[in-house]
Length: 583
Ligand code: SF4
Ligand code: SF4
Ligand code: SF4
Image (cartoon, rainbow, N blue to C red; front, side):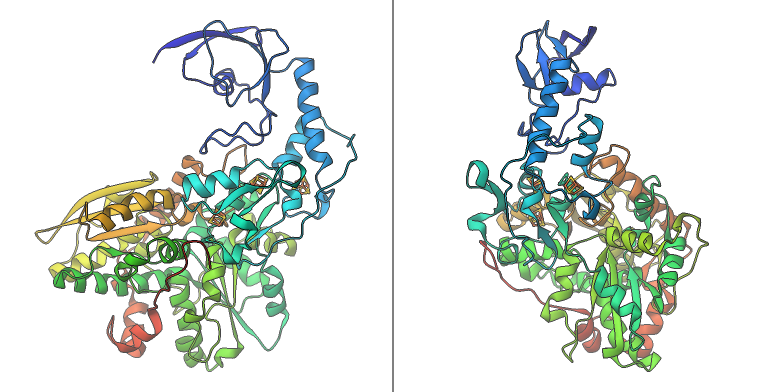
């Protein structure tokens, strides 16, 4: 690539001619303050906090949006620039609630951190402040427009990464607000509840709908038997909420922390994942043998399923009818577990700890309620919410001894652990489907061709003399690429895994906010979280879902055969075509 020669803060530098000033400064170890910038999203240049002085003039340019050129002289930190940045920030703060002490983002707010690092210690301007009610119609996401600083990261992630295009900037000037089209309530929009807008929002203008109070109340209610299940990806990310590096395996301490919080039993969503694999592999084998309804589209990701219902309803017959691992396990807790424990289902309160805000919506879907009309999952906490609860209780999770899950619904194979990473569901399903197809034990369990944190992957896999065409997509923008090929019949796949969130569940909309200056959607963070799950898988002696002895016992004593009548009634669901413009 062509190089140019510039000077930044009196230091000469040779850089790529395509570089921005912001990227060039980082080569010198200078991180120019910024707010609306996000490395995984398009350049917005809205906040102007990253302005620098170019060529000694009073020509202040946004460094995120300005390309370098030969001979450019840049000052990133002159007294005038520092003052201009403070003025810009004070104007943002003027129109911002004074609620830091009671705000969910206190101590991890990018606006608060910026005010601290720029030395803004008082609020100079007092003008009219915008007033908007909190929008809480969605089961998953709440929107507080009073805290919005109009950086448009949410608009960009929803359009560029998720291809949902649910948000845009409405109205003008002082009345400008970010919202779904026609100011529709989020619950009546095409929002698929993924929570990626929460992840990228630098402030508390988007948050998950808080379920912690409902859980505290259930834990304090002596009439309730309160059980909890934790999703595969929780264990590789929860440590970040306590300042550990991404990818620390916190399975054991998290179980102990949940017991200290007062849960009566602690189960593993991985058991539901093993069950999903057995049911889904059965479905796949049937379809491969009949040649009917291919490719099979995986169905574990709640955000992806709502996306399918809104935007690709013609492809709904291809989706596996399997409930998600959370909903499978919750259903068993209100049926099988209720029966073996002798506890009426209405007295069992099921909590799911999920990396995902869309699971809050899934828990409210009427078609997933029990036959008696009870929700299968009573409350869903995100990883962040569990971190808040553990901190509120004063539990020092980092130094807790390791606990173990309760049986029978807490034992899982390694195949279930990798569900949390992109490609993991497909790999786990292949470990079981291959043995069903060939009748032979599978010796090589690692399908590495589908492992990657990249958004899109296609592979050909040989099983029993048959070549299976498979694809893996994470992030719904990538899913669209595959789905369009399926719709147009440009490509014939046998099995397609789709996860709504970038990186899979490990990058879910409810995972801890990154620390150490890292950004959400950082591929390295997702790689470290995924690596932890693959390590857990490798360390297990049972790595195929159908070899989980408690799954075998469940079928023998309760469900009958995989895919048989009771298994189908309890573990499978259906989908609902939704309007492409909302509801
Ligand atoms: S979003 Fe940030 S600056 Fe605004 S009230 Fe919350 S913590 Fe304070
Ligand atoms: S939750 Fe996802 S789909 Fe909904 S507005 Fe946010 S980013 Fe868009
Ligand atoms: S809601 Fe958050 S991410 Fe969206 S524009 Fe406002 S501050 Fe930025």
